[in-house]
Image (cartoon, rainbow, N blue to C red; front, side, top):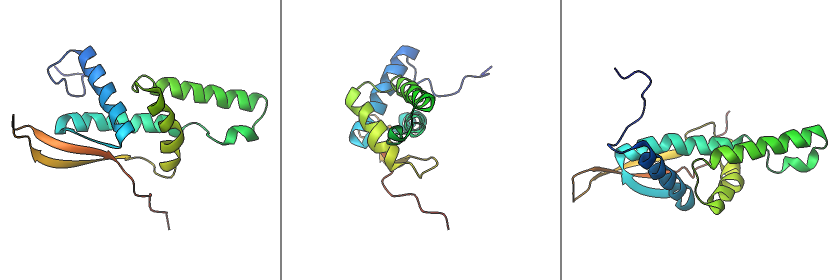
Length: 143
């Protein structure tokens, strides 16, 4: 039975799978788009959206307005979000980019930070290929 076993296994060990997706999500955040197989892109989308959501939950420039217990709570929340994101991101500079640039870029967007474009089949092994990229268009304002 497949109770509570979600996600694709890819025929590799869990440590290999975790390392692969950590590298993929770091490369996606660093370059903005990467080319990979379609099943990997669909699994990567879940992780990438989660990491960007971590960055949106913390205040960026609002810390100067706070003081006392509110400031300490905001700093603790920011540190917690950074530690959660570091589970998936392997590069410090990319982590900084996520918590500064991407949190501002996706502030108005409620979700769906990535886009998957199917590219066809790879010549060598006939695998379905896809391009996964971060959305660059601004979220349309509510009327």
